[in-house]
Length: 42
Image (cartoon, rainbow, N blue to C red; front, side, top):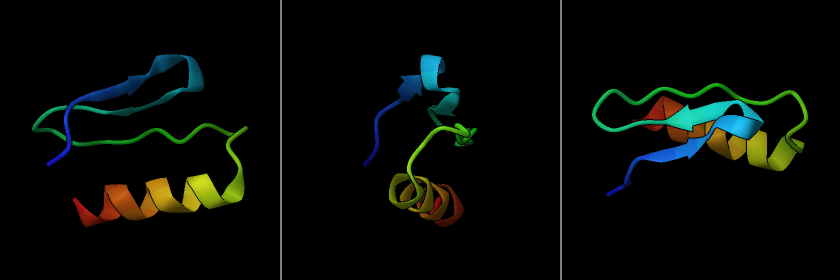
């Protein structure tokens, strides 16, 4: 289970029961891909 996760400075958020993500433009490709997969799979 994932807990609430907030990286506001990097402009992406995974929050509580309403999961959503805002990927930063400066994130490296591997991390961005993993976040995209994570958001899509929730």
